[in-house]
Length: 376
Image (cartoon, rainbow, N blue to C red; front, side):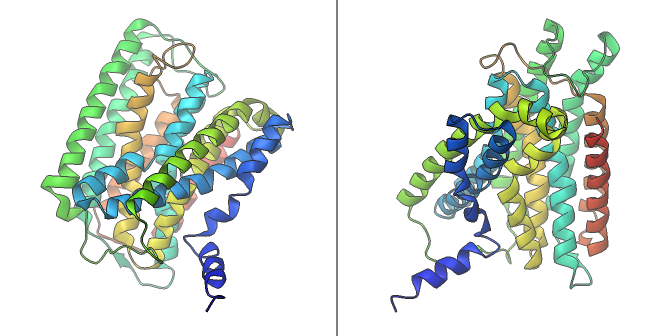
């Protein structure tokens, strides 16, 4: 019987849920590379991959706490910590004055959730099925919230386009905007946060039944974690994410030049995928198990949280962190891409069923956008 734990651990590490922890050794590797002043490309790659297991651990700890806190507090914990790794990365980027990288990562996360994650989930889940069905009311409510948030997010850019000198270039590092644009950005940020609070009330209290389908149970194997262990793991993950984020952000500019990629591409594609890699894989994992409800809610809900919570928090934080405040003024490529993606989300979430071909189409759109960003 003493031989049981090892095989169980090995099975978990190579499972759909445990694979991110195979990347744990890259955390000390990234630290060593940073302190020995190794090449920026190697530092960037090691720290980027090192973020993935820390994000996975944070997600698992949050889910374990949520399972013991009741649906209300549990849901609040899930939505609050759902994008914590990316928020932490963005805060360090703010401190480094990489405003355009921060905004690119915000747009990249929304695109990644709607096109990459939802597309991969539909493709994987529908590969051996004629179609998968989901509750359209919950998904449509999230998609509508995302559309309204997107309208609010791009209004400062439209204001700057009409009243100011124009939109920033994808190759800019940071642009200082006049007081009126900053005031507009702060106003939009406050309104988005109020909408986010209303969305929590809607999804966790008044219409909670729409967001908790009866057939979606917890899929974690093994013994449940105690509250003490969950809090401890959450704290460890938070510290590890912070360390990896600081190293990652510090190497972005030099590494992007060495690799031959623009900081814009790194922010909108690489950083966005890395910050949400563990959560993305969970969405695909649920879809394969025919729980497309959860997959779509994870994808659309996470995108909505980026627009309603993470973006406004970063705008307000920029008045305390970094060389000067960050305005919510996106470049033309970001505005076009995010609007197209959100319109696609609106169309898909109203139907109530998916097929593998729809997933392939979403991935194709993401590939076209990534290719376009590559040539910037």
